[in-house]
Amino acid sequence: MPVPVIVLNFGHSVLNSLEDYTQAASEIYRHYRQGQNVVAVTSAQGDQTDVLMAEARRIGPEGDAKNLPELLQLGERRSAALLALALERIGAPAFVRQARDLGLKAEGSFTEARLTSLNTPQLLQDLKDHDIVVMPGFVAIGEKDRAVLLGDGGADLTALYVADQLGVEAVLLKDVDGIYEVDPKSNPDAARYQEISWADAASVAGPLIAPRALGFAKKNKVPFRVGQPGLPSYTRVGAKTGDKKPAPVPQKLRIAMMGLGVVGGGVFRRVAAHSDQFEIVKIMVRSPDKYIDQGYNPEILATEFSDLVMAKPDVFIDVSGGIEPALPHCKAMLEAGVHVVSANKQAIAAGGQSLLDFANRHGAQLRFSSAAGGGMPVLEMCLREKGRITCVQALLNGTTNYMLDEIGKGRSYAEALKDAQDKGFAEADPTADVGGADAGAKIRLIAMLGFDEAITLDDIPMDSIADFNPEAPAKGAWKRISKLWKDQNGFSSGLQLKDLSRNNFLAQADGEEAHAIFDFDDGDQYRIRGKGAGRWPTTESVMADLFDISETTLT
Ligand code: HSE
Figure 1 (spheres, rainbow, N blue to C red):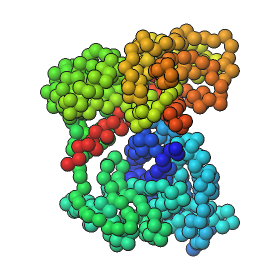
Figure 2 (cartoon, rainbow, N blue to C red):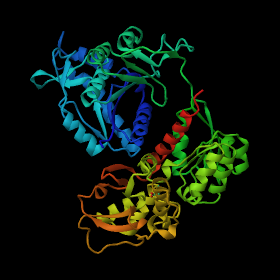
Figure 3 (cartoon, protein in one colour):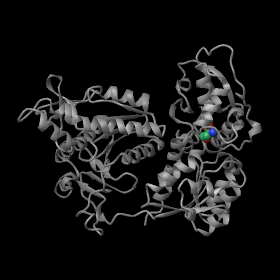
Figure 4 (spheres, protein in one colour):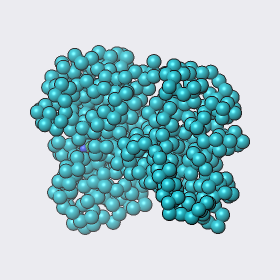
């Protein structure tokens, strides 16, 4: 079965500052973890196009200049590169493609050209190889092989054209979560269309959607959505106009956290950037002084769990390590109906299915996407595909992935370990990373969610990489593979160090990158990837859980 694809267009209004690229990457990651491949089409940041135009006017010839598109496309290209960098930071597998690479051709006026073709097989191959393709909107290759532009708001048109060529859905992301009868910024009670026809959208959507893009969609009957990053609401644009309703608003969630280390610090910063949706009310740490020195508000720091409970949070985020006291604290929160997002694989693996059942009984959500795979959505895949999975092979410990790569390049075990610690990949006590207990906890989580199997660490034969200083270089690449499978003998699992052929998808992971291969009972196979450890990939996974919870609180 082919992996579903979605085209997301990031308009000028949602790319106003460098911080907005982080939000855009987050939006893409949320689609990726739901099992979609993404084509992200970028607009220029804010008023970049006007700035470039002013420069062209100062230097260029009077009137129409054939080389104008060479300059004006730079805004969209810059955005594509910045977005790819933001994706790379969170470990998402982004690949930038230019209009020329993708055979995106157009004819007619070189400032308002008409799109005529796309090398669809190339784009599909890129998606297969990289999962996420970022491309600049607004520009195409015109007659005589010159760059041409698609007119005002041309990135909308690029996105709709690409979606139409691929036969998939496009979402145009704006600074408003859909199409309203009147501008919701000046009319807070304005109603949003759930669904609107192309013709009606043309009369009410004003400058929100580029008229040429709407004209293209109407003529070619291309349905699409208009939405806003981070919000679940949107308007469908298509054949007919439906009801209007005020937009549902997610409840602002009060958050209590336990832990403020590598991941905790990242979560703190990302949550602070969404102060309209989340508020951190308390953070439990061992030594508040250390964090006060770093500028944290003393009022939100606590050393006692009871302070967290008294702060009456809606969500408890556990970014601490170890089973105690994390597991009893998670249970206490769940019992009080507080949703829990946990990055703590040891505590969740120890709690097992009974912890999930406990959460259900108390009407609370327990989410722990970041507990295995870092930014690689391995647990989402398990939840989605449970019942048809026959085998999972994965690189589950970022520290080991990184160290084996470095050792393969000729570095010593000690140097590689020190580096992995400095980069924030390793646990406080790296014995669990190199010995296998960290990957073991993640194997237990995959066994639980993907195979309905409750196993202990002792059930998993494990190769340690402690003091691994191979005498001969690998023929392919050293990888320690977590494997879980079902066959006529029942369920098995293991963690094995291997010299893997470079042709193997798992061997192609670099550094702390994680790769996983899922085999299904119908012979189908899916491959996923992401960074397996580190502040930003893990933080993004926690944030995605938080956004998913937020979506369930619409009022
Ligand atoms: N120490 C862990 C690893 C962190 O290296 O994979 C992410 O779970």
